[in-house]
Length: 300
Image (cartoon, rainbow, N blue to C red):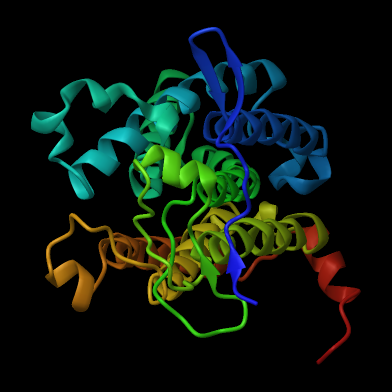
């Protein structure tokens, strides 16, 4: 039996004229849970270089406001510039409808990066200190990616290419038909559930990997390493998933048949993340806590 997209209403509840969507709640959940997780990590001085967490709880509260603005503005602007600039002249007011979808990870990542850099300059953070802050943010970032991709699945968007694998899914249900006036844009053929692939790879896998690196192997004591692993890992996962993810319809043919936009935007992440990993590992000195973790790890 062919799997079909479950009949889950993208709108959780209507409060008069206001619709509370799962997509919007995914962003709220990612930010709040990431905030709480980061707060717990800051209470573990043993994880950080010289037993000094990169910022205080009050500074974290202030930083969250900057990052929230960065991810929303960057995500929306990035989507419009990279994927669907026609919104600007076809329906300019839709530019502001971020609650309906249309967000770019690479744009959101750039927005967060710029917000964090500006915040660090405002608070007088040095480069090494800023790298540890980046490690903190990278450790919690997969939570937001996990919820965001699950929300993409509920919305029935960003589906994969046509496939014959047993778990292929027809991305058509009552709510998709209602939204598109009786038509399902993905058609009636089973497709890869690429949103779930990304939820696992970008979300669960990266969350577990960064937890293991930071809290078991104490690699947060090497400023920039965990951030580099996150950036590189995301780039690898995204490039791989893009091979089965259906390219956006409005993309030029080059970005459908040669390289997708998601793959193109992920290539610089491999370079930047790789440089951060190299920089963090080039020092021969390993912090005491990391040495202790290594001594407990059996030889292969």
